[in-house]
Image 1 (tube, rainbow, N blue to C red):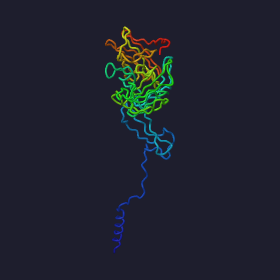
Image 2: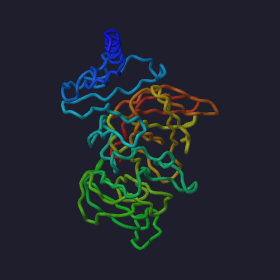
Image 3: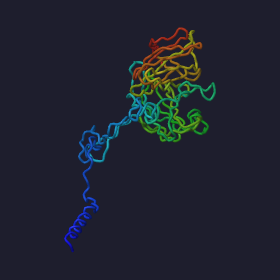
Image 4: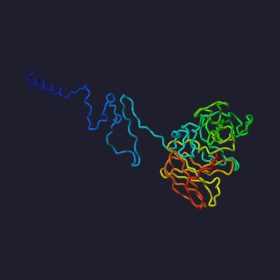
Length: 373
């Protein structure tokens, strides 16, 4: 072969070798570095500071409107794979209430918050609006002698104070344990170890589904005496609760909202609502609005029969479980609003009198006559 052809063949081999495909690299290239890494601290090396954030997102326009605030991201703890989430505080209106002031509780010499609530704090403590003390139900001549507390069937009914069971079962109103149509249904009555102004005190728990105590049994505050039900004259499960002063008698009741210790931070509104000429206004609407929250409250004055006013306050309207603060009180009269601002103080009674066209008076009542229960 001639030398020229040998040189050409060598150049052809070199050219074909330079055109062969390059094999893929066997090693993974380094990760792409950015100025805003998604992970700032490995979980296994996280610090114990609760404020350290595990996730740090690049700055982007917020998807929330100006009036909205996103929840904070979970934060780490000292243990890997455990996250601390923000505590969600229940809004007002949730089915719970603060603990009550200790019993007995009385900031005034004439107050007598002697009893604990007869149902647990897991349930709303406010009486049903139109089934407060002195309300009219089931006809114009039937006046409510207690408060109806909402609670589901089977909820525990608790003794409001220490004492001895004097009734347990059916027939409390009629006095006959054979009267299956007794309006109280299954009920318990307790005579308490303490009284007021030398008068014995009783509490009544009615419409129960089950009674868990017997006559003669001593119970302490918080003892389970039965379960909520709907026996007797009722339209649904709830607890009917009464306070009786002097005798265990239907005609001797007092407003329980003046006897149950209020929740801490809450107060009680008590009033006398009269016409311009001093006549009691029965079943008369009273309105209240919180100036802090805008929440509205309403209650009616007592009906004309059966119920009894407190010897000191001589009231015909009570509205308890009010968060402390400033309120707008309105007793509409002669088709006109009669508004005034009042302050509800924690653990106390705010008292007012209304005299029709003469307006409001916030003077406390005089001391009751000696020996008046």
